[in-house]
Image (cartoon, rainbow, N blue to C red):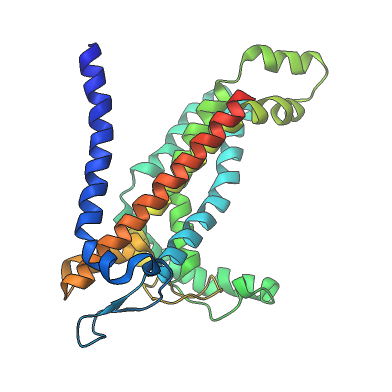
Length: 296
């Protein structure tokens, strides 16, 4: 058992190293041509430079980070509220069915969510949500521009739906693990239920909530199919959330099989390498934060 466990652990590490080696080796033509400047280049034109192409990652990095962070900004408070309701407020006979229904969101295939985004969410956003936001907050660049069924905002909402069950499930487990003695001690000191949640459950569960948010971020960063269907796939950077955009995963999924040149294919793999690095760095920072908070 000891050797099998050790082999499994070493195998997991070796798999990560192997994936990284394959990705960066296949991306070497683009790395040799553009170097680190690929990260802040905005050009993405497969037919430029005499058919060889000109490529850069900045548009896709911007779309990936903005859509993912916006999704987490919406999903995190919703997930915490749902978890608090299920662990502290809901009647006992309601908790299990509601928890199952929330977690079932994770079972919906991403292509179906993307199709729902095209048929239902996109028209609703273009005809109702974005005009309402523009009328109230149009003076802010984020909420200015022409309403569109495809863009950063629909993509962020779809990613919110995909990240919500993961963040909610982990957060609920964390809140349930709060020691009963701490809850009873808060009540004994005269705290109300909300004060007990605010002063005991939330602080104790903070490291776990951070871990849950990072899991949700990992889901949002790597999602391709659903984002491809609703984000608009336009390689440009605009401040408005109403404008079409592009993400790294969506670009790889939509263009890799039809890449006309080896440099184009290598540039797409370079995008995959950047996405891999971002995911690893985010997880490393989260683990360091959780460890620091736990030690305190």
